[in-house]
Amino acid sequence: MNKTLSIILIVLALALIAYNVTLVDFDNPFQGDSTIALIGILASLCAVVLLLIFITSKKIEKKLKED
Image 1 (cartoon, rainbow, N blue to C red):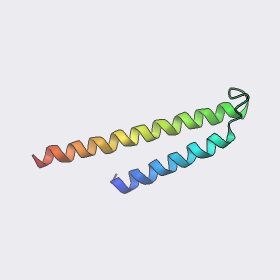
Image 2 (cartoon, one colour):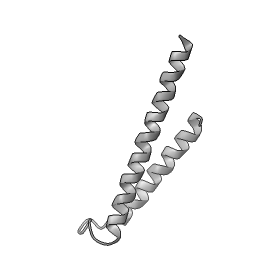
Image 3 (cartoon, helix red, strand yellow):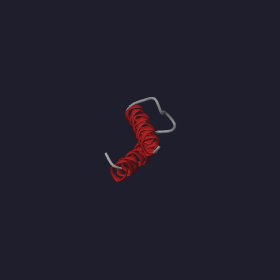
Image 4 (cartoon, rainbow, N blue to C red):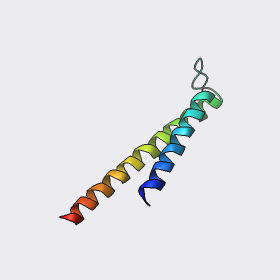
């Protein structure tokens, strides 16, 4: 997976976060569809963190191969 694909996936995950934030009822965040939206937000955040870790590990691997 190249860097461009990783960035596209990160942007898609951020778009999902933005969409799910609009679905959350902030008066009752743990009832009904708000719970599903919160789960979607957490899943998207996990995806972003994993992709950032992947990009960092590829940078480290590249530096180790150069030396």
